Amino acid sequence: EKHSIDGKTVFFVDDNALAACFDEGINEDFVKNLAAKKPLRVVFRDDGFASDSVKINVEQIFKLKSPFTDIRVI
Image (cartoon, rainbow, N blue to C red):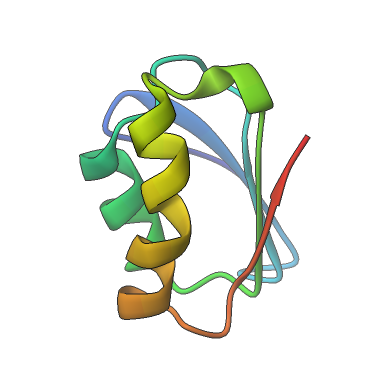
């Protein structure tokens, strides 16, 4: 299913088994809103983050809001 979260396109596969976002300009607010959905796995594009600090903080945000989510950056 294709959803929009904070203006970004997110693809959800098998309900919440996988969430994938390949948009650019990913910021911490978006990551917090996505983490609140508690997907089992999440995939981001490596150059999709607004800054290096957002990329670094993704793991911490998910640890707080959805600690069992497996995070991949491709």
